[in-house]
Amino acid sequence: MDGRYVFKARVRLEAPQDGISLEPDTAETTVTLVHEAAQPGTEGWLFFRDTLWRGEVGDDAYARELVEEWLEVPVEEVSFRELQADEAYVAALKDAIADDLEAFNAETVSEVLSKYLGSSIRVVDGGE
Image (cartoon, rainbow, N blue to C red; front, side, top):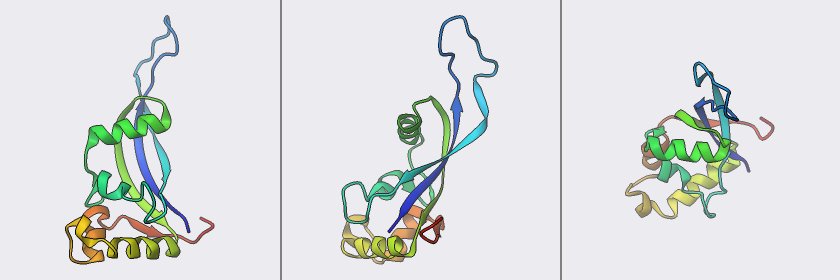
C-alpha cells in the first residue's frame, strides 16, 4: 500500500557565504517533490484534510513552511499537484474516511475526497 503527495515548488537561492551574490535569486526551475502519505488511520494520515482544499493548498504560508522544512531551502511558491496512490491505499483511505465522516463535516466519502483533494487523485500501480 503506497501513497504520496506531489507538490511543485519554486525555490529561492541564497548565497552560501558572504561575497557571493546571485542574480536573480529565484530559480526559474521548479522542484517537484514527493511527500509520503501516512497510512490511513495512522498518525499523520489527515495531512490532506489539514493542508488541502479542493485540490489546492489551503494556506500558502503554511505550505511554504512545510516545503522549506522538507527541502531545507527558502521556498517562494508551492502548489499541490496530486495524491498518487495505489488501489490498496485509495481503498484504505476511503475506509478510514468512512469510519469518521463527522470529522470531515461531510455525508459521504466522495464528498470528503472532493472537498479536500478535488480531482487530484491519481491511481498508480505499486511500481510507479
